[in-house]
Length: 474
Image (cartoon, rainbow, N blue to C red; front, side, top):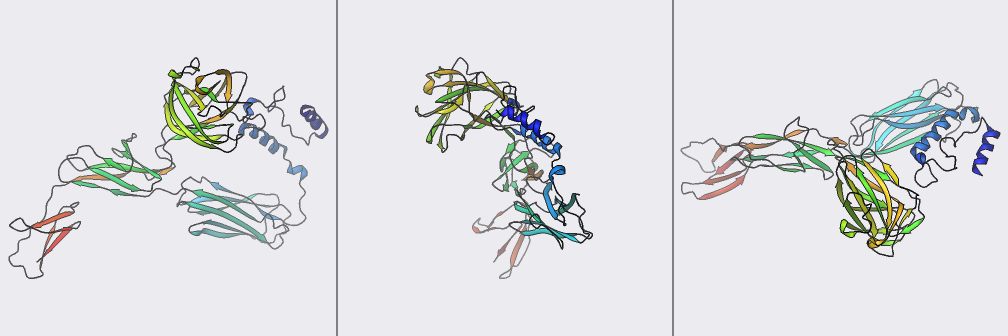
């Protein structure tokens, strides 16, 4: 019926109809798998891109829009230009203005403001079109301001004019957040003799310290805010870099949310195309309430080992709260690695024999891939390896990370942290007579903090803590 209706619409309303069928639909009236989001009903991003391009090409406004009789200046859009996750000292924002109606040459003002929830207004100014905004021409204004410090920001634009016929499109706000940039304090160490030093960097808990042997080496030697040096015999610098954001790349593979079978377990294969780390799963679980999910793995494909428990290793049991059987539940667990070109079999099963996962008989093996990982489904396998049903396409998603992203979202760049090796030295003072309340002043080596005064009998008189000098009062 839909196919016939499509033909009738194109026949009756052409050229004022847009073809959303060609390329998207197969001859059997289903969504082409290339453009299926996974549920057989909704399109994925590639499918939506095709529809969007056809709507844009139709240029609908030229056919349906009637220009107002009076001026209608408006704020059309606000967008950021090269805004980074961490923010910048100077960020640029584009504000598009448009007059939907005719221009009467009267002045039109546009107020622009950048603000955040901590510091208030960061920057603002007013631009005036002294002769009004020309009709049907998009003009772009810009506002600049600092988004360097983490927080929630807003760019607001308000247009006003004496002969504005429509005030509903005069104000627009664009909201966004930045994470801010890492801050740090280097903590050096001083040794009196050759040995091991402990260097550290004080940071925000959300950041990571990456240590390098020098300014240019591409390979880190340590991660974390504390670094114990090798044995040193002279003063030596190591270089730290404080990074905000993940130190790796992340991606995922989604199967489908379309299910017709509810059974206890499922098996599938994961094949690594480079060294990756599996982080977590989403699983469509048909039994609500608190459930335990058992996660097993084996080296090599699961095929031929569906009913052999000795071939499998239990890597985790995760307790989850299943609220809705139609929505996939996130299952975090102790991650595991897959080496490049390795195949790993996965078995997901409910600890409760009466609880079920959801999947579908897809009629054959389903293969899904990214550049780093391939997923091949799969079989339905009952609780405790008791029965196997092939083929089955499980409903879920695999999250993983890979590679090195050593500068994260932003970083401080490398800075030296020093292990000082310094022999103790100080300036001796010769004095013959010391008056009451007179002082002896000794200047000693930088980095020394503890001082012990003794008389000729080696008796301890006092102990004080100063950085550069200590005074002794009689």
